[in-house]
Length: 170
Image 1 (spheres, rainbow, N blue to C red):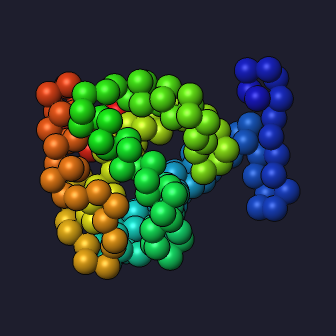
Image 2 (cartoon, helix red, strand yellow):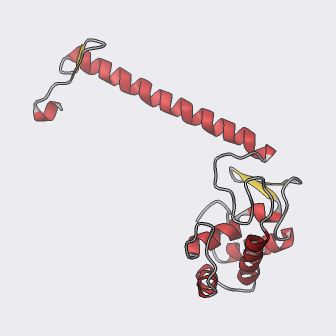
Image 3 (cartoon, rainbow, N blue to C red):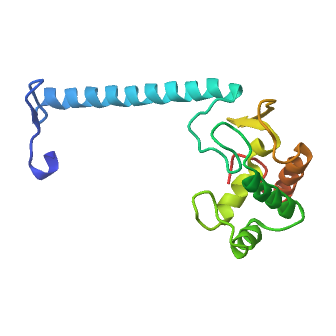
């Protein structure tokens, strides 16, 4: 505002940001706003970190193949198995997506399958009964696996050979 010749004046509290004192107060307010934003972010992530090991919902979308109560949806589970089987047999993410599209199979939202959705399924340990959070994986006996742990591990090894070693990165 200063560069274009305007002054900002607050009536409550009584501050004129065109003065030295007003600019100091604006800097202090901005500092407090940034601190508060970081504090809220840390609290949210702390809550998610506490919920993850217990298998509680932490805001991410429910994975394809499961209901919000973590029950397996048979039709979707068959698609998940197909994706893992085709990937482990040597198909690329794009080839799998093209095959699903050719067969008229849609995502949960009704969209056509694309490379990112296929890749996300392959790297998601949920399908093998694992909880993943912040770079860690742990078995979860309360989660019904759609694919075997061996099938999942084979896919992760293949991804590593293809140059994508971690489940959390694209």
